[in-house]
Length: 291
Ligand code: G3P
Ligand code: CA
Image (cartoon, rainbow, N blue to C red; front, side):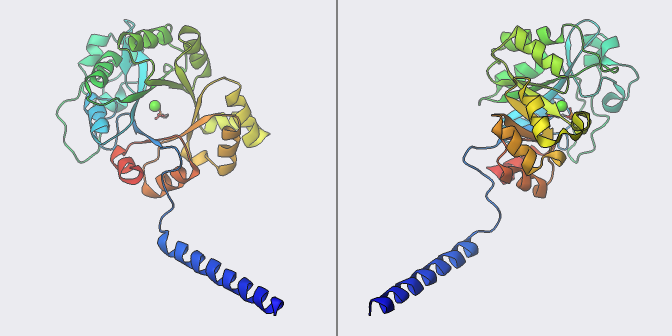
């Protein structure tokens, strides 16, 4: 009698568990995008598929599309001003010959930065902005907007003399130290920023060249070399972010971002890993998928 009861109870439990399993598989559709912590949405160059990259129009558009942060690139002009542009060369985005470091800021600011823009929306002339102008735009917003300021090197890969001090001073002037992460592929630049302003958060950028330079060491060696810098963030080209590398970064306490993720499938895959931020040229798509 006792044995019959036990078998019946076992069968009932199996039936109940099977039912629960079927029910849960029916209700789940796409993988959940929002993990325990929210994923910050970062508008790459303001959102360069929606507006001319690294312009005031792009940054406002990225903010209007709901980005938590805007990402921008800075160089130093011949007269020591911070210029927001991706390439050290003027050609791709302004159709002018020459390099940022050879021009004075006033002349650079007169250039139209729409030459590389291929998006649908029409924009009137969009001048090359200074970092000061972008920070003023961020200050004017009704909500708090974070910044990822990428400090670039010149056309020969050399650090611009004094660029780190200039960036820190500008951020201090606008009271935006806390809202900002300084990012760079050039790690000595990051270490210099830390010397000047230890409270600034830093992010090491990782691309294919860096991964190749670490050679055969694999994910553990890559993660160890980034963690040794003492930075808070690592931001990697999403094409190289494997689960194994993600886990190695996390095990060393790093916060993780991925760039530049522009389509739904990849945004879903990267978000499901549990990254801390995603950088995209489509801040509208980030809002659609992550909010
Ligand atoms: O946010 C990182 C990403 O901007 C790095 O690549 O070439 O677009 O500056 P790049
Ligand atoms: Ca950048």
